[in-house]
Length: 349
Image (cartoon, rainbow, N blue to C red; front, side):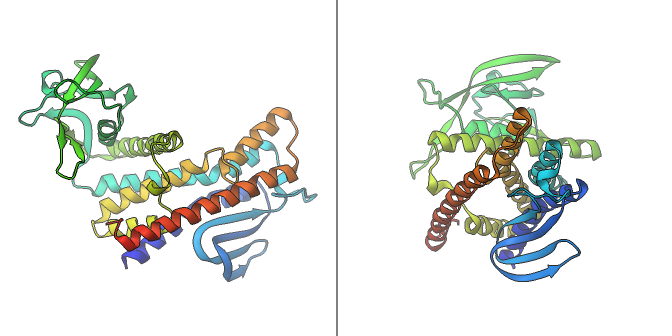
């Protein structure tokens, strides 16, 4: 049942993305020839008045095929016949719908979790090293010049930083806090680095934060904060991937994603909803990247068309997307092979 729920969650994320394209196309008067969920052989097809609704064998990805999308068409309702701004809306609608879904998933998480941490310091554990500068009631504004919106932002910066240490081996971080209505810079706050027997290390946070007082306004605010925080975290991670901080072994594809989501189901609704929010926001942000075959690249071509006042040749754009799609499929196969290897060896546990 956990695996079934995970697969259904994955399908919901795909459907919402494609629905964004579909609804935007309909509102702009564009003829949609096919709405497809999945890839591979067709297992179910239902013909509507103008659109064929298709379910394919493998529930990874989907597509909305529009008239005049990949070639010139004289049909007045064709994609290529619509103004650039309308085509931009259609292309961007898919990723935006993923971000909206992530917002609502974050809202459910905030409403169901036992407590939501804020960014305001409440107290310090015994032996805290940062209590000589931080004070109870300080609202943390930034860590290492990265703005802080949620508790997870603080945790992220504590575990992902330049690892500046002092002679005692303690981690040093720069904070900005709001204290008595003023923004104060706190230099070189110390945090204990605990060494574990297996050779890994943990950061001892050194302070606690107040829980969120939940009401309609704060739930909406913190849902938006969580959505923005997750989006930024994904961008940071993608940047670190290109910098070489992470490798292919650190990536997960559909198999790994379904496995992790199915495990989160056993931990309860809050854990599942946070991971669901993270994945759908990930899909939205990743699709906005200017990578061939993704929505971000198609949006970039439309920007170029708006500047040049002339579209690129459909053949050229088609080849670019085809090559990009092929490379993404190769990457997916490699990552899926790694997922299966981890699954067999118990690496996801």
